[in-house]
Amino acid sequence: MTSERLILRDIVKTFEMPTIDMNSTIKNAIERMIELNNYSLLVPRKNKNDAYGIVTKKDIISKVLAEGKNPSKVKVKDIMSKPLVILTNLSLDIRWVAKAMANSQVSTIAVFDRGDFYGYVTEACVLDGVYNAMRRAKLEQGVEFVSC
Image (cartoon, rainbow, N blue to C red; front, side, top):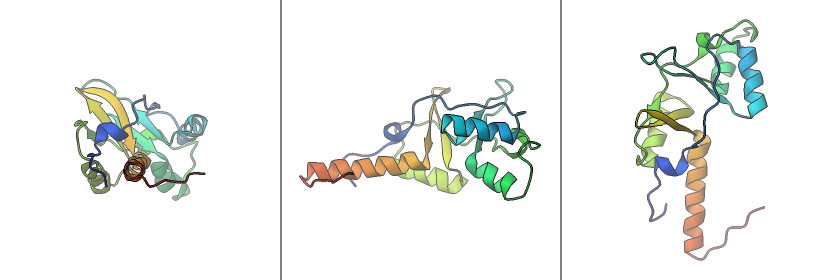
């Protein structure tokens, strides 16, 4: 791809992931996702010994809408993924990030640094990272990228 190695730190979104309470309805989750234009919501832990959870648009579509369930009656805790798939090595090669997503069958992975939430990475982050690396490589070779 490029002479420069693409790593997790290069592609992680380093801002806070929006949260939702596990007892909220899926209707509330959908409203929050649309309002924030973010299709993954972190479900906080009950205490320090509990695991984080996550609810994504994929969960809502496959576990609620596709099954004909009423979003106003289903709770986040009933469909969320828990424990949350996490990565903790910011120097991890992007290949291993992609493998972690594929093996876990998830589209969003939380990133922790020294035990604290650092950000998250999505399938779109991986593709954007690869695309930007390809653009940089082309520019380094003197080939112009035309963009709209």
